[in-house]
Amino acid sequence: AQTHLGQRLRVVGFVGQEPVRRVGDNGSGADGGSGSTQYFIVHDKDKKISVEYRDALPETFKAGSPVQVDG
Image 1 (cartoon, rainbow, N blue to C red):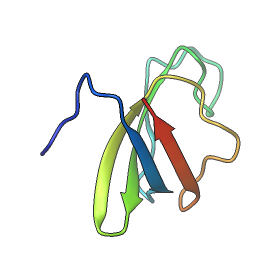
Image 2 (image 1 turned 30 degrees about the vertical axis):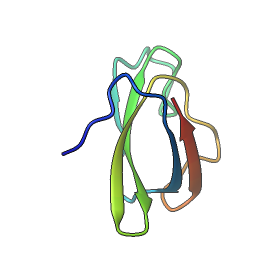
Image 3 (image 1 turned 90 degrees about the vertical axis):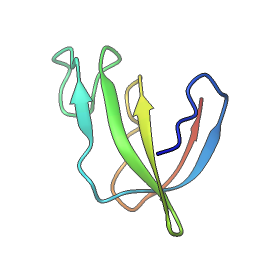
């Protein structure tokens, strides 16, 4: 698997059907508070990209919805 650690990237695609995995949730609920890290998959055509996101997910975040991740 290719990694892009330390590089600035913009990923555009759709939120995958795979469940979001949360680590370090600070008890702020299922949306993932600012103290948690979310791991999810972004799909773009035939490609799948694993994303580590360290912030609260937006309210519009759900499987199948369009997403852009900058980092």
